[in-house]
Image 1: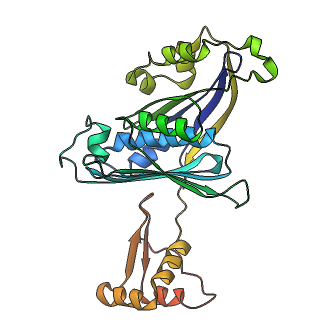
Image 2: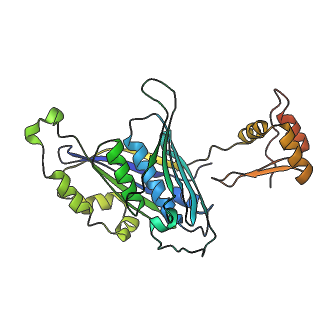
Image 3: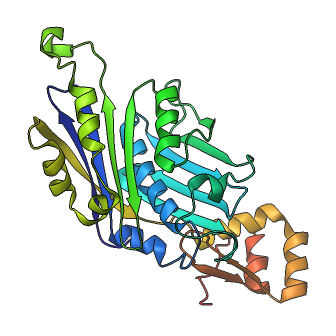
Length: 306
């Protein structure tokens, strides 16, 4: 399932000393919001969605990027999965609203209240090869925002100085990423490198307010910040919410549970019922459906409405 179209734009500043990306999720973010109403920390997940798109587009990697936060505060779990072609899905598990938090709570108090939170980055290659290996790393909680934690991660993993600006509300999620390019000069030659470009462009971006990020279009934001700079747009990529769940995948999960476990659930509840955490689609298997799961070559029957 997918809704509307939002865009991620890549650009260069100066003579290529700084590369950047900006993404604005509106209808696509609202597709997530509609499935996680009244969840504490929802806007932080919006920031994570925008950050994941920027991070995925900056990596030379063919496959899936998954950002996971396992929290020890009101937020128990946040997951954003980015797939090729700008597809993503996200889910949030949190304590009930009002359970010791509010919309203005700090990032640390939401996910790392007792120092036991974990931030995990996973790369799943589309095809395994010598150059594309699975990767999983734990990101230290350095900083008190999604942006500061990920800035530290990018500096450590890519060894590229990076600045990340994020904001989200119920209507949109926005992210701006700036990265300093190596000082090799490339085809331009070292004589033409603007050594002041990185500190100057950071200072300009630091003037951004949350309100500006949320209210202005990407084009307007870039113009307001860098109107005196040489800005070259490279490309635009659509970003879409799309879930990968299916009845066939649920059937495969039941098969992994085993016939005995499935029959136990049927005896107790009369049917096996599950719901996707990402898109809220429900799946039901009665005794006949469940029996078909364990018969080789028999496909599950079409989805039954809940």
